[in-house]
Amino acid sequence: MKKRNFVTVVLLALAIAGFISVDAKATFTVATFSDPSGDSNSPLFEVDFAAMTLNGGWADAETGLLLNVPYSANSFTNAWFEMTEVAIINTFGDTGGGEIKFYADGDSTTPLLDITFGSGYVSRFNFGADEMFVANNVIFTGSEIGGVLSAEEFSFAFANLAKLTGSDDWSDGFTATAAFTSSAIPEPATIALLSIGFLSLIRRKR
Image (cartoon, rainbow, N blue to C red; front, side):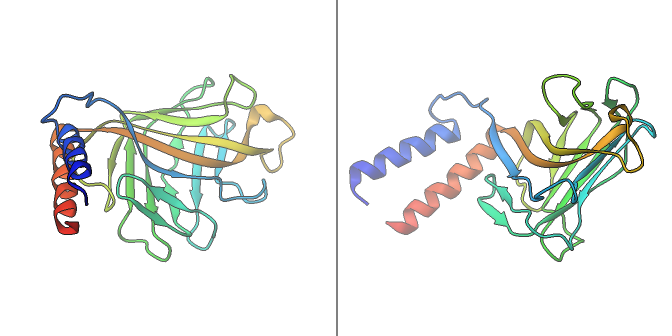
């Protein structure tokens, strides 16, 4: 590597580590996936306003879910996830808490991403501008999450909505496919660790 380029990279790494002042409060993407289902016949979520429950998941036997984890620079083909049943607590769509676990294909013991949340909101069909599920008081853990994060957020954007089986009324709820995105802010110590590892990689390449 040329000396000038090396200096530039070192300055960037030092800035990330906090030795040179930068805005350390910027959020970054933790994990995402595009909608793995082609149509409403294979939904990821069931929003039931008659039973006041929200259920979701994509079974290990299913294929097509590519989980991208920019935080760890890894991707997982045919990943899957499960979610605890979440209570819908009022007709506006506010929900209680729950847990979502993402796994690698064929694994059910070590979550790649484990999301816990204290409360949430699920939109009703044609109620508001977006059809989605979002949450509050979110915490990310899992094998792909190292260091300390803050301001964790996630959202599922619904698509391919269909009426619940046996119901002709959209107000009862719906099933939906979904895409997923999540973000967080790294704590300074986490940024520093990532920068130290980056500098070590540069030294090895030199």
